[in-house]
Image (cartoon, rainbow, N blue to C red):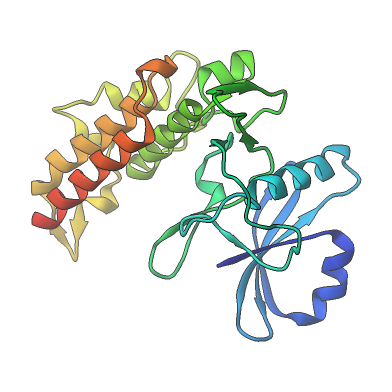
Length: 254
């Protein structure tokens, strides 16, 4: 899916080019729709609420990030003429969650909505922000101190990984101050892991996948490692990818 950014007026002018549009999600500064252009192109259309002062700042921040980033797992931007290829510095996404990840027809994930992302200055590993990401996914140091870093994104990824395989949102009503998604999952290891895994993942074509229990343990352990309390104890992204590749090979061999 392509990702196209519109102001409200631009959307009004472009309305006639749409054959179909469906709401994908609503954020703090507007809404995102899936649209199909008259030529058959799938697009994600962001409609900003320009009555909100922060909406324009969010749009500018997203453009600043996307003009420096090109990757197959990021949502591609089309027709914003000033989004040229630039020098890439470390990018902190700040709001990684399932709602900001789109899946294409091949189940390939594409990350979108860089409205509160930060580009770190050279040789810096963290920065401060007053803009809060989504509660339940943000790292402890982000919520308490406004400190964002790549390790904060790793925390969010870990929570998202746990949610994907348990089908439990970190803001589910069963999780209260004394019990979080992470604590609930951690208590299941290793003997009771099947009790927290989404039942839909335990069968394929009606056949029980009991032989995959070890694989689920590896995935859950990775999610827990990524979402550790202290940033310095979390994996970096290279370690995460290496472990995911190893798990994938193990799954394919089964």
